[in-house]
Length: 341
Image (cartoon, rainbow, N blue to C red; front, side, top):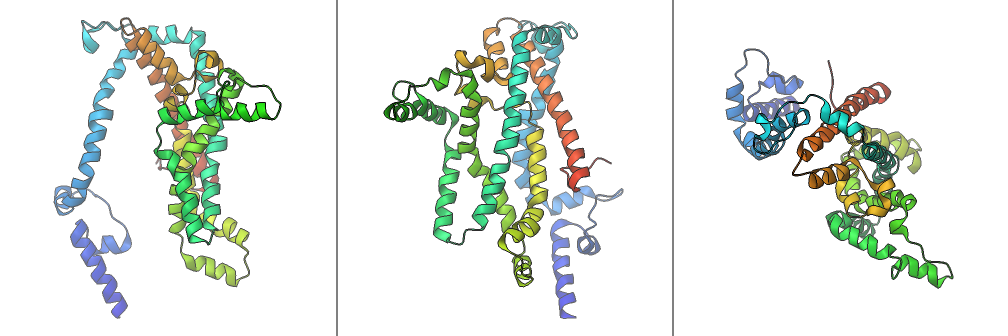
């Protein structure tokens, strides 16, 4: 009786805070049905909406308002006429772009780098989170986490400089060790075949710690009684990982996988720009760096329109991968980022 009264009281308090009825709160069937007084609910939950307002304004101002510029992809940019006054030319910008061998090379490199990140960089934070969860020494665990997270707070400009210093042919640490062992110095930074692995290892160094935070937080939310019950049934530590921990964080893994898949055409401008040079364009030139050069080298001509066309192409492909990834993961494990009715 007392327990029911406490639950009813908690539901009533939540109802007064959110504007939903007690039955809606208790059953979880909260919806903005037809005829509901939406404005009244917003007023009652005004503190929550006020906290959300800066984020909404940020996306409106910096993401949605500039979207009108996408029409430049089908126009011939003329500065004196502006975006709206420039003449329409149909699909000519796209035809011009896809006739260039440089764009084909940039698409290939972008896809290869993104797939390498998906296959190598994506699983590592999950693995590290699972391993950290098995460490009982609190001080050692915190120390490992700190050293893993620190590279995330270093900008790619600094990190790129560190990598170049380490791999320098003349006085780099790696080449000094090779020379000390009797080997020949290698120019890693000008070797196209080495660029992929330099980039991937740099991404692992910088991003693994931050990704681990997400999965560590998901693991922390698992009910400890599940592990206690499993141990009573004779489950080993490895069994707990594969039968409890991983299945419980699978929804988070699914969402992160879909987000990674939806960025398949974004190979990471900051990382590539701070590590590449003309000698490695063959494997290092991605869509983002291609667009950057296209924009800067043709800023007085039609560079704006051509850059917009490339970015529209990227966004369209990423959107297709987002929908496809969401549908595939829904069919495979039952989890998805959103539901399409």
